Amino acid sequence: MNDTVPATSTLDASTCLREVFGYDSFRGDQQAIVDQVIAGGDAVVLMPTGGGKSITYQVPALVRPGTGLVVSPLIALMHDQVAALLANGVRAAYLNSTQLPHERQEVEQAYLAGELDLVYVAPERLNLPQTKQLLQRGRLSVIAIDEAHCVSQWGHDFRPDYLQLGALADDFPGVPRMALTATATQATHREIAQRLNLPDARHFVASFDRPNIQYRIEPKTDPRRQLVAFIGSMPAGATGIVYGLSRKTVEQTAEYLCGQGIDALPYHAGLPAEVRAANQSRFLREDGVVMVATIAFGMGIDKPDVRFVAHIDLPKSVEGYYQETGRAGRDGEASIAWMAYGLGDVVQQRRFIDAGEGDRAFKQRQQQHLDAMLALCETVGCRRQNLLGYFGESSGPCGNCDTCLTPPETWDGLVPAQKLLSTIVRLQRERGQSFGAGHLIDILRGGDTQRIRQQGHDKLATFGIGADLSEQDWRSVVRQLLARGLLVSQGEYGVLGLSETSGGVLRGESPVPLRRDVLGRSGGSSRVRKSSVAEQVAEGDRPLFEALRAWRAEQAREQGVPAYVVFNDATLRALAQLRPASVTDLDGISGIGAKKREAYGESVLAVVAAG
Image (cartoon, rainbow, N blue to C red; front, side, top):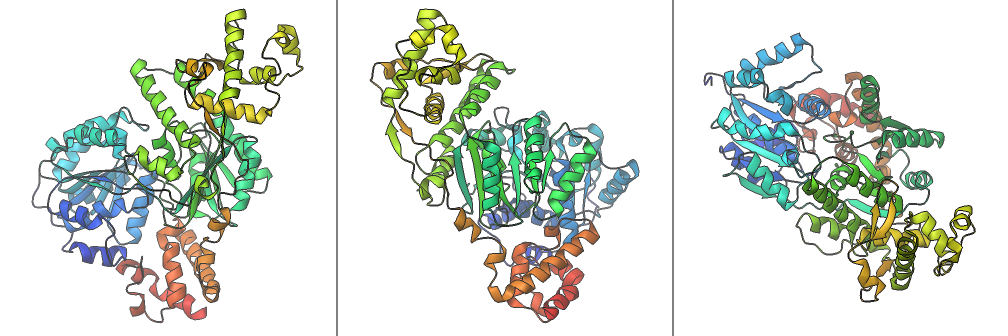
């Protein structure tokens, strides 16, 4: 390693935070993490999205001599973070497949000359021998492995190339290493430290709670109409992400939303690369855009003002759900995580697991993920409490999720469960037949269908004994029994069968308390509406705030960057409130460092003076 490469900075951590990033003080564990790494120690950092993980490796990279290496799993994340760093006057770059050969060569030469503060590389490129050889010819200040949960083979975002990153300890001895993630159970946490070879690292585990996000889950009846109604309850111009399970669902939902006057764009891996790039660019740079996407979109998306994340299909795991909903409200403002969830989701996910690849242990792990997700959906307690408990964090009721704001009513479901299970038993044992939920419900409700008449199911002893419940009520019963493992879904067509625990219900030995579904829960949407960005600005300051937003939008368009790279909403609010009259007055306003003060100071002051 070449020790003659000059140091990149003589700043201390506090000065760096203030002068470069425009913040007066560190938050939470940031100071302790920064001190640990600057002193040369390793760190494992578990911190929720929006908690400020990037500061914990960017500051050490600027303070320590050399160039900080950031291992990032997605090209989109690299581009966003590098753009934001350049706006703050940081010498940042990336090496990835979007660059032409001469562009990569320029970055490589800058690194070898000691002219870069940070360089971003994907794990796949980092594992190439020529990339490691290049990095060993220069000087690294710190190695930060972002989205470190991708190393977990049992996790929800496994990336095989992460498994080779443990070798960085031997490839770059003496360089402090960091593993960072916003999504890790206790088991994944242990796996991160083991696989990335961080035995002596200091561990920092912040709370997983995102108190600004309101969690809401409602029964799925007509998901697209429900989605439109939900989006309509949000403040005008709210930006959001809608997740669907399949490419077809994504495209049809985006088209439907557009037909309802909502500015919606599709995103999935099957779209041409140029379409994905254009749609993502619009989402990042414009207000009020709704991105309808598969999980191919989102990891590392650094847009702070996403006001809602909606799911119209059930996520495969709590980790996936937490990570996806965590893309809302990164700026700390009130946001909503909404989901429509129904019987079809349960059947579909179980079918995917049964038909999927992998050995028995892998499928059991997938089933455990799904069971935990179903428990979150079906809980009659606080959703946030359930969610945090999954990550090993205890808490009291939050008072701001749908089950806290409108506590669900429970009812004794033992008799309906017995009626349903008895129908399945009679069909299987007397006739050797199995059916899905729809036909079973028709039998219980005494339906006059061609299939019932042809099969002679109107002669069953259980025919019509469930007419006291509506079809929707029965679907709720089936869904909840599946979620609790009192029923199983089998085969390609999702026929229902008994589980090992069904016998206790049939014998009346096991209680079956069920939650009563309430369609269209308000979930406190008015509370979120009152917390919209514009409404948090004092009435007398709103004209200036809107003028500053218009100025910011123009600056962002001219530079071809997202608006938040110029200034975030919190900075605009402070400017509208404080009304600085001189460049000196800009000092101390959160988010305005030396570079942005120099770049935008006079222009901002002119907007304030005109306002």
